[in-house]
Picture (cartoon, helix red, strand yellow):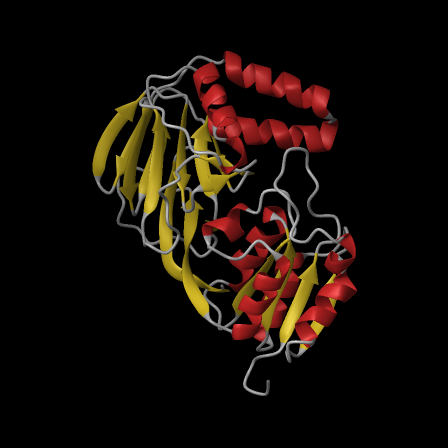
Amino acid sequence: MTDRRPILLLVNPVSGGKVGSPPALDSDPAALEPDALLAALRSRGLAVDLQTLADHDDAAALARSAAAEGRDVVAAGGDGTIGPVAAAVSRTDATLGILATGSWNNVAMACDVPTKLEPAMDAIARGEATRIDAGLAWHPQDPTRQDEDPPADAVRFFEAAGVGLDAAGFGASQVGERRGWLAAGRSALRALRRRRTPMRLLVDGRLLRTAAPAITVCNGPYMGMGFAIAPEADPTDGQLNLVVFSGMSQWDVVRHWAGVAGHRSRREPRVNRLTARRVTVTGARRVLPAHADGQSIGTTPVTFGLDPGALRVFR
């Protein structure tokens, strides 16, 4: 296909397989080997080079370089691989292809990318692309105003961002990866024992107050272990979905997350949902932890915004 841009295929060979996750992209593990994925794309007439990711490789940097060289990027991996690659090629001429070989594949599902191997390969080969919004998170110079432009170093997210218990839970997971799961358990228990701290939310210029233990700002329906926090969220609609766990205890929120894990929907009348283009969160009495796509971004105040149509995705 001479009219197609060349492709860099990035493969994370250790993605997927977490307990409770949905079926794999293909039932045959051999079909998901890097060389097999390369051969399957080349058999569809595409010019593809392969990079199998090792521990020291920076997938985002590789994707950014490929985009600068005039190539599209296909990433085979889970959300921890897809998210940074998507951020790297946002607002470039490159289009992202996703081979969802991870455990939960929240970004692929949100973008309506096929989660079976042959349809996913066919979508890349067709070359039809859809524009996807990118969420943005940054620390505002003045949290009482919402007219400042996002800084160049604003963090991009494609699943969700959050403040409070939401962020503390992901922080505990990061502690587990660094120091073991006993330390993670202690960190999670400390978060659950904290008293709820009032927050001030500035939502498209409207001031709201809440004592909710957590708020989540969603670009897509799912986050983390397939938590269906905002099943109605659409990453192509130019809106963020704000989820406020109002009138709930920390344990209530944890139980709700457990109930919506694995991409399951569940109605909870105490969960308030709003749509917005910009949300600024400030802790009324103390600073609160914040995250974007599960990665710590420091503490409040923090502003969440949107870059509409920032990413082209084959689907």
